[in-house]
Image 1: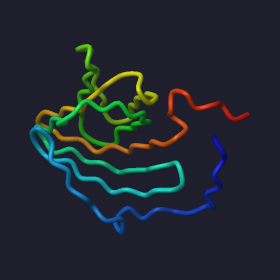
Image 2: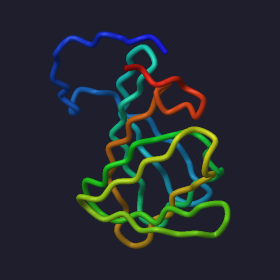
Image 3: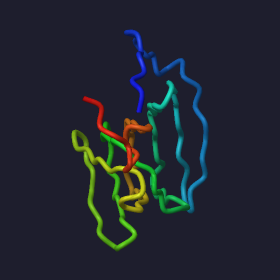
Image 4: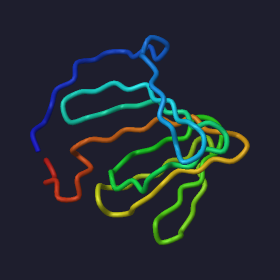
Length: 122
């Protein structure tokens, strides 16, 4: 993996376009910034959201507001509340997100550095 240089910059999320993504139930709303090999998203799941697929991609997820249940394909469940995170590499743990009454706002970072076969750069 080659290092990519990103010069210092601030992101005013109010100016980043918001896209809608329908879940099995509920909606998700993404605001996305992309760099070479890196994607940074501010994501909101409505209350009663359930992802319509099992995700195999790697993520670093930080919960800003609300609450989300992270379900693994093997049935394991964990809950993220504000101030909590989860991290997973590509192709290691199929997962999906589910919300209840609160909905949730997350900061999600993913990219080539989370590929399970990515070489470590010293």
